[in-house]
Amino acid sequence: MARTVLVTGGGRGIGLGVVGQFLDEDCNVAVIEKDPAAADPAFTDLVSATPRLWAMSGDLNNPDDRESFLSGALERFGRIDILVNNAGVAPRVRRDLLEVDEESWDFVLDTNLKANFFLTQRVAQLMTGQDPKDGARGFIINYGSLNSYVVATDRVEYCASKAGVAMLTQVFARRLAPEQIYVYEVRPGVIETPMTSVVHDKYTRMIEEEDAFPIARWGQPSDVALAISALVSGKFRYSTGEVINVDGGFHLRKL
Picture 1 (cartoon, rainbow, N blue to C red):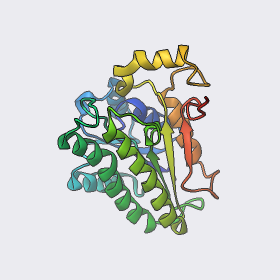
Picture 2 (tube, rainbow, N blue to C red):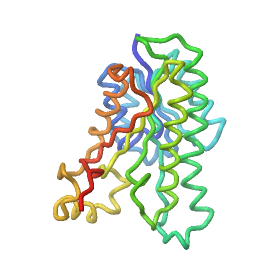
Picture 3 (tube, helix red, strand yellow):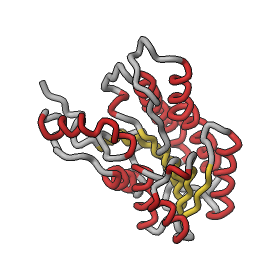
Picture 4 (cartoon, rainbow, N blue to C red):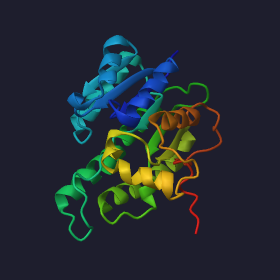
């Protein structure tokens, strides 16, 4: 029986890479996308051509949309094996932390942390009630960031949200391990997506001229997707709460 994978915000960027990876592995995939009009045309084509891919428009900050997403996936595919908390936002405008307003704080924290928690909580409730498959009731993947430990004073909202995600990963991993549900954090680095397009020149200089990245190239969505595929392969069954950096070695800082 094919596994079912939920991917939030899977219409473009890293999320689309994850969707493609699991479709290649013959999984069923369900996607919730807040703004289908902003999705990559390749995603729209996949939805039209692939019966194993179901997508709905919805806002993860809305409890009713979260529940509709889960009930729709269960109705179509019968169970939930993997949750990939891919959806995330950056501040609309980068501001010095002394100038950040509550609207920007709430915008980022509500999506990156609050919605993440309550969707994961609900998925965990559903996973605990299903029979194990190949020794696991489910896998949950959270996206952290280099900014959970690398300071950026012009986007404190994002840093705080990702530091919070790191702790969510740990507490869910500790709570769910007895239920045979395994939780991991993936920390993408500089990945070539629409989100990083606004700082493309800055990071290209860091890659090419500043020796900041031991693997001296831009990361691709497929790099993150392959790491997630490995984590949910069942080959890390004696590990949970782990962090894997998909960052070209950026975390290996040197003086």
